[in-house]
Amino acid sequence: MKNFFAAILFAPLLAFAAGAVHLDKAPDRANDMAALQNGAKVFVNYCLNCHSASYMRYNRLSDIGLTDAQIKANLLFTAEKVGEPMRIAMQRADAKVWFGAAPPDLTVIARARSSEFGSGADWLYTYLRTFYRDESRPTGWNNVVFANVGMPHVFWELQGEQVMGADHKLTLSSAGQLKPAEFDSMVGDLVAYLKYMGEPMAEFRKKLGVVVLIFLAVFFVFAYALKREYWKDIH
Image (tube, rainbow, N blue to C red; front, side, top):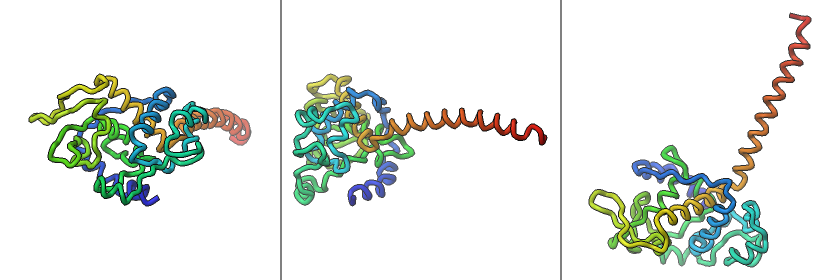
């Protein structure tokens, strides 16, 4: 819970710092089950080594169309039962020594990064695609959105290596395993999953809201007709 409240407390300051940076629009894949499933796979394989999602249980992945058997066979690497939270084995004290700071929990990262300058999804989508080589940094990497970030570029083999030019624009100096469009699509899936993880019931809530508004509209018609019938002799 301490990580959660720290993220909420400092989110406005971090968002303000990122306000001068153009944020690319993240693709909307909230209702794309295949994209969310792929995002979950990317998260487990690349992010869950260092970042926990301790407020998310594996069995909630059934919301995006996965069965318990599929979860156990393909995604359950850091736990034994699907009802367990997405925790990591790395201790915070060790992480602080290795990285300078313990990697934050990512359960609500998409919500924590939301600000007046853009959505949390846009921030994450831009951040994950704008790492570039910087030999002055301990990890050898820097980031356009989050300057002097302590996190290394975990996707560099997939994206390739980018360099910052004199015009402050990124160029791909060496190709990765994925083409740029393929890499962007993969990051879009991951961001969609991170957004889902922060509020799993968001889409259901939106659909329920539409149903409630329709009900109220229909109810208003009948209520108004009843009111006219009741008061017609008085007026």
